[in-house]
Image 1 (cartoon, rainbow, N blue to C red):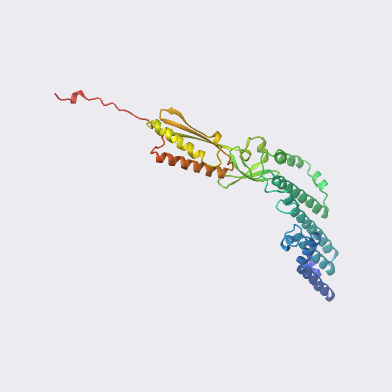
Image 2: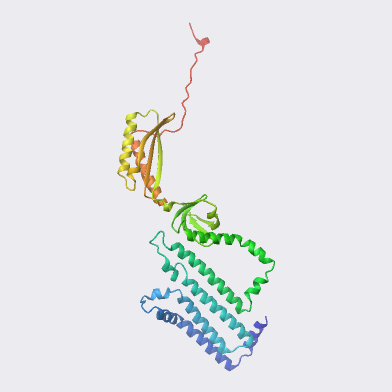
Length: 362
């Protein structure tokens, strides 16, 4: 409150010379604000002399932070020219230092962002087992380190000693340690996922009852997108206590189908259907012909069974569903052309009619 009163009194008692200083300060701020895009461009260009594309230079991780820094310097110079009271000037210096710390931290965060900056160079999106996961994980770890470092520097600017702050927690530190147990478990599991690589970003996995495509791996959680486009966030610690099935590591998928035909279907018709299905599969793409099996399998009380076993090199779940749909449609067309319907569970009831002797006539 005292600082606000000092500011009000400063502007109330302002002299003509100070008004000139204020005008000069405003001019400097405006000039630097106008020139900041050009100056930022030139500074970035100095370190990227071979780069000719202006848009790429403006997308540089440090372009916007440098621009903000130049504007902040202009404002700080303007405040120094105005020369306010020492109490106000001290606060302005602290605020300027904090702004500079935040701007530098933002530039470094952009620099290690997995989608841009130096970490992006580690990525290779053409490799399914490439470095996308490592780049994403490393980038996020570095971002949090930068944020923590910036926070400690800001505390130092205000004269707060982080070590004394932590020591001052006293009994509360035990509570914090207890609450951090899950965080540590997830962190260790995250590093385990990164080192062991049971799955990568882009893999289709199943863990517990959740199944979907891995879209993000962080140091605490993993996100998967299910078949119905919902995003499920799973704690990394759960991967150490649940079996993980990685369908992306499959070389082939097996499709097993049992077709039950009515008992009255004659043997010639069954043989013809089996041969026609074999012909369709032998002339279909993405099928391992050596492992394909189509056989008249069993005779049961409610029908005769034809077993079909198919191995395909289509492992991506969405493409696999389309493959199954195509095969099912062709098999149904074979049955329809042979006028054979698929049997369904049923039971025949036979009623024996007993003739009433009292109603008989002589």
